[in-house]
Every structure is written in C-alpha cells, then in structure tokens.
Image 1 (cartoon, rainbow, N blue to C red):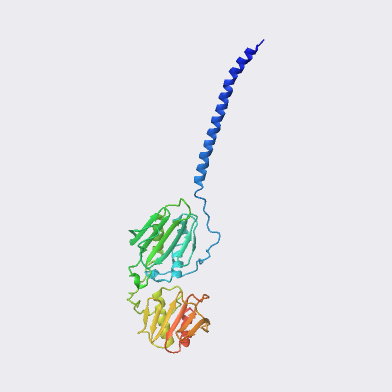
Image 2: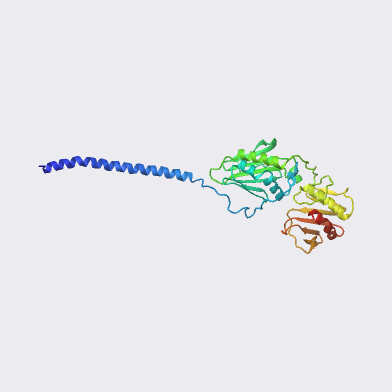
Length: 337
C-alpha cells in the first residue's frame, strides 16, 4: 500500500514534464506569432501595388473620341493644328500595334495631345516647337531615335522623350518635335525607356511616310505660293490651308492669285483682303449668318464661326470691299460644300 511519501514522490516526478510541456507550448505560440508577422508584412508589401483598372468612363471628361482623320505625309506632321495632330498621332499606328508595344489593352483619346492609358502606364504624345531643355524628370541627355536627334530623361516614375523630326527654327511656328511622355500609374511601374523609344519609332514611321517637305518659312511666317486643287481645310496642314485660302480668295475676287501672299499660320493676303483661319479664337458674338453659319460683322471685318463652339474654329476676313459677299463665296468650298 502506498504511503503519503510515495504520492509526494510521484508528484515530484510528474511536476517536471508539466513545466516542460508548458514551456514548449509557449515557444510554439511565439513561433507561430512570428510567422504570422512575416506573412502579414509580405502581403502588405505585395499590396503596395494594387491592381490598377482602366478608366470606367472613356474618353475622359476633357478628352475627345478618335475620329476619321486624313493622315499627313512627309514633314507635314510638323504643321498640323493641335487637335488634328493629336488625332493623327493616336491613329498613326493601329490599335493592335499600340497594345503590342505597351503590352496590354490600351485606351486612346485626343485633345491637346494624344492621351493613352493602360492599367500600368499613362502616356501623352504631342508635337512641340523645340526639344526640351528640362523636364519633370530632370535635364535630358542627347541620343538618337529612328536616326534623328533626340533627348531623353528617365527616372523611377517614367520617361520623357523628345525627337526632332524636322530641322525648323522654333520661332518659325512649326511644331517639329515629337514628345512622348510616359509615367507609371502604379507604385512599381514597368521599365519605360525602351517602351518610349519603341513607341516613338513606330509613330514616326506611321506619321511620316514619304511626302513633301515643309515650305521654307520666312522671318514673318511667309511661305512660297503653291497652287492647289480646291478642297476643304479640315485637318489640313497649316501651309496647305494657306494655299487653299489663296485659291478661294482669288475665285471670290475674280483675280489671278499670282500675287497672293500666303503665310505659314493658315492665312493669305490678296488684293488688300486677308483670309485667316484659327483653331482657337476670341469668342464670336454673332450679328448675322454667312453661308448659314453664325458670323460677327463689325469694323474689324467678318468672323465666321465654323463649329458649335463660339471660341473654336473661325475664318476671319478683313480688308477692303464687301467682305460679307466675299465670305459668302469663299466659305462653302473651304468647308467642302
């Protein structure tokens, strides 16, 4: 029969393993807690780059949908109005090629520039007067793209690339530089310098197929006269608009256009009358209609509103004679009527 001393001996023997098991359990809990912290940190780091989404509404509020546009040839891409240039650059290569270069589905819209987005990148492409001397990513370095002088600046957030397509002095009014700006939409964005170069090369090939050179531009913007077939001015390069204006002035006035003075900035003067096209102008305050369009007639001349925007595209006629009658004759052919 066991005595009290025997029970105390048994208890002493079992006390030791109980403490050991308790210690083991505590260590296990601490280890599991530590593993949990490591997993949580890993997940949080992974979530630094949340999965981006394409915009639900497109085009964006300030953007314009792509529309059919006549593609320029030769150097004429450097002489387009801003919105036309944006449309051209967005469509210089097919949608499939955009997506091949950028690696995924791409949305495009026009405006003052061609704007494109993917889930990872935000891209702006436009024509500019000169190569940038500084960018948001610092001072760019010289390089070449498609055999042309270029400058490039890259940081962790993206790339700014400028390519001189045509050698034209900036003050002459042309926009001979292709600017490609690429920035990341996510924290850990993809490499952008190579992508910007590839996109620029593709756009240059698409927007500059063989064709005419820019006309020589004088100090005051004057260009040589070229006689062209009548046609609409919509989406035409600025010098072509000037030549079309010269032709319609001559027909409206009933005189030869040999003495016409076209200007690079979409205008022409003939026999004391000037016709001037503007993509953006002072808002028209209509006082009458010309060729069925709202028009403002005052001591400064006749301004015809070409679109629904009073501050948008206009044709202005100033000089001597009956300008309203002249505009009635000249405007319809310039609009393709």
